[in-house]
Image 1: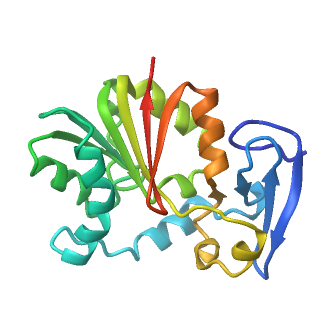
Image 2: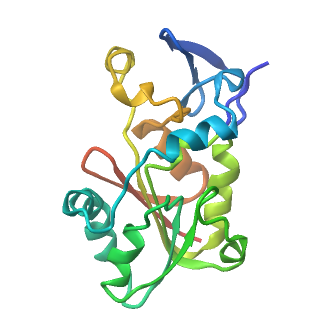
Image 3: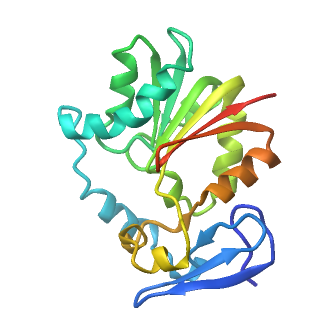
Length: 212
């Protein structure tokens, strides 16, 4: 039986299907997700990631990332210690925070698999265009919370589900490495469950602060 990979609920309904995959929705936390048997294996997943060409010197890419850097930088103390989780092959977000005087560590399952950085706590954690790739999102979510100091910030970027009609024509779902899709309702559920303060910045930036 398919259970929700985020909250483990059993109340799952069909949400949408296209030529390649089915999409289910949890009736408890509203997460939309691809059934486990329709996900890529690790080798196929990495082949797609290797096509990503994120360049720290690309001004357009920096403008994209500034949508999370700017609001998060306003909320953290000088010389804060941060972790860029899922930084990819061309870390850029970490450089932007380092340019502002913060201390950054990197972790990526494929490109920076340095497990030692997961033994510390941080003032803030960033995960840009990461959470939609997670096969076990609740496991990683709990890991993030454990890595955050009290009052620490979690900064996320991901496109949000609006409704079934918009989802049907949504390019974001067509990336085969995207397997879980969050909505505002999903993040509000998590904030209430885990005692987090939440802010939505624009259409795709979510800032959460650990209250305890």
